[in-house]
Length: 352
View 1 (cartoon, rainbow, N blue to C red):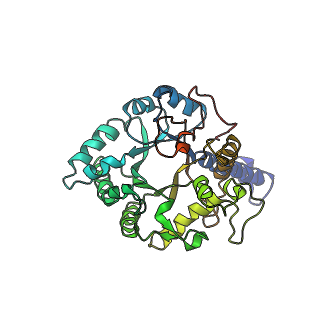
View 2 (cartoon, rainbow, N blue to C red; view 1 turned 180 degrees about the vertical axis):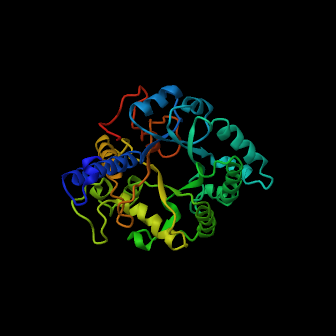
View 3 (cartoon, one colour; view 1 turned 90 degrees about the vertical axis):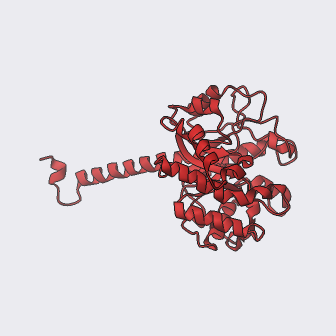
């Protein structure tokens, strides 16, 4: 008999075994935390590397999760056998068709864009629309009524393929769906979209899928001068009166508090986008972007969670892999890249 197993009291061998178990537990925990970071791969640029080279860049930098905004065939082919977990997006413009009652469009969509690749591409989420349910002042509200039907039809096809435990069907929202967001405990869903959000959240609770949330302290700071740069950039020396030391945690917890108020406290929140641009104004600088990304990665990888969810890893997707020079709208949208088009890093960043 091994002498360590012969001991009946805590002695050197038992202590060694306990220490080895602790080290193993910490190693497993650190692996889980390190995998909490992903990166969004947008393609609205005319100077970006080939898809296969981008997948290699993910792997070289130990990036194990990717968000795609649409089922780009070349990207999906390049992802075969890579081991990278994929959040696959469905553009808002397809939601109405996907929500059709006969579900033929949804069946074809899943067949062509998921099942054709699922044997060797690790799909983790399908994001049915992106910020498709904003406030009433935005014309994109037209997409909002179709989200639930589209999610239901997509889920039905995923379930039919037996992949419902592997692939979670959700939608990506952003902070405009919340009201009264500070302190975070006051947060509720905006009355203009409350009925839609209740239906969406009800579906997520039933299917045990997380809510995807785009969280941008940058834009909160840009439009609210009362927010200090330190609070937005994770550099505040101490917590405020509500226990928050950074705006990111406060914004994530705002979603958790709002979910509680619609009987959805069981849901997880996955941060499907978060980033900081390096141009073209006084707060969108290279220095601030470097600070934000570095501190966000460190915070997420620490596994510390948020004040409301301490110790709960925050699965987070950084926006974005590259600058996208063909993006319209706010000029800042072109400058969120972590890498230059030549695949060199913009910032000194260790993702793991």
